[in-house]
Length: 72
Image (cartoon, rainbow, N blue to C red; front, side):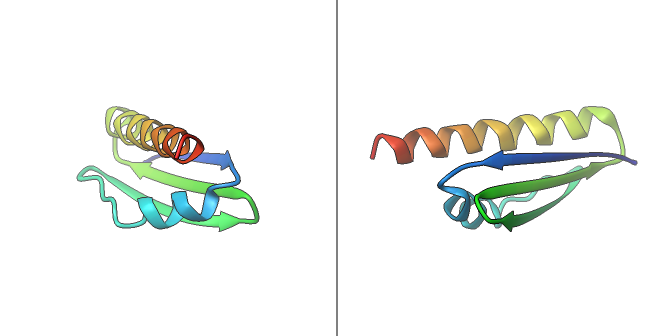
């Protein structure tokens, strides 16, 4: 089992958390948590390819949401 923890420090952490929580990955287990201004994504997958795919998706989505909120 491969795992990765992504910590995103953002003033929009609560929005990121509530926006991403419903998302699911078919080949990875994903847990989300909040710690002050930190949005934390824990990903576990059976293979490195699935781990990379899930990480890329959540990083891109987080970045996109932050950009949208900054320019809203």
